[in-house]
Figure 1 (tube, rainbow, N blue to C red):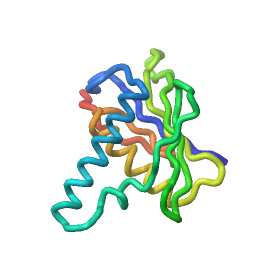
Figure 2 (cartoon, rainbow, N blue to C red):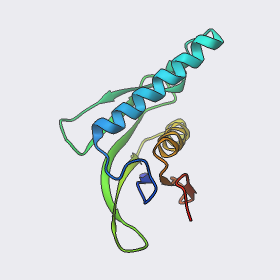
Figure 3 (cartoon, rainbow, N blue to C red):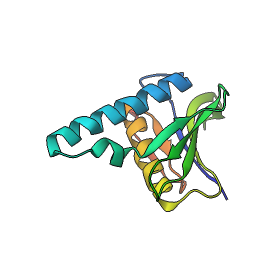
Length: 138
């Protein structure tokens, strides 16, 4: 059974709307930051931290990451709209682990979701259903 995580752009987030290009840019920033860490440590940390290549099916709603190392297979990232508790529509990033994804994909998906949610100051609902609030709340 597939699992999904949601990064909701709620009130107080740095952005209220997100595109696939924004997601790609955030992932590229993640890779560049891990590359800088690798330079300080003296090894190729960027490939270990992000063992995926981006694949696109020509759809403007989603793309998938294909694993380049053995314990990683794939995960799907896309944009969607969900209804919040207040009843309003909220834009979000959906990360899906389809059938056949590995535990490595789930662990890396959690790591990427936390990074993106923290960067966007968003609300993250993880694969296990737990919620982490990175947005400023009153």
